[in-house]
Image (cartoon, rainbow, N blue to C red; front, side, top):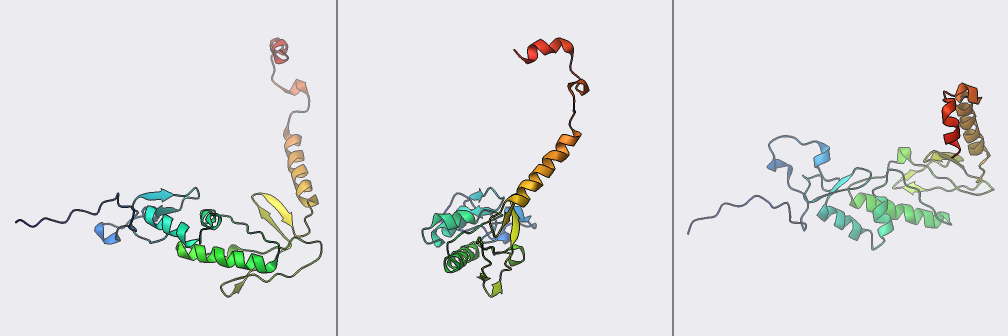
Length: 190
């Protein structure tokens, strides 16, 4: 009986992590590697933020989130906001989120993370990621909107009015400034 040569690994097997990097002779760009196992992608999935995972690794991440799919889906966001009604609950959410990130081969960038308490009075909230305390801020901009710890919006409204004023100053002031053919006026209102 002749011995059979091993066949190349099937890319259709979804119950295994990525392929070892050594199966390819040349170096690969990171876009061809799983964000979790750091191997060559097998049955790849890409999140909206651009992170790529093996199908196996993706499903492992979802299972590691203790059945709470909200945490697993947060792994694919570049900007994350965690909200809670108490410092204790927020720290628990932050710990769970950090654990889910770690299970996926990612980490929270503490240099880009901040804590803010929404309250009319100044309240101290010491949040930790591992042993690092996150800086507490009085305001921050998220998705282009300025949030303040007191929940006030005056500065954001003033900023938007200022931006609109700048645009309006550059817009034509009179109809005479617009290049409109007088023959088109009847069609403008019909």
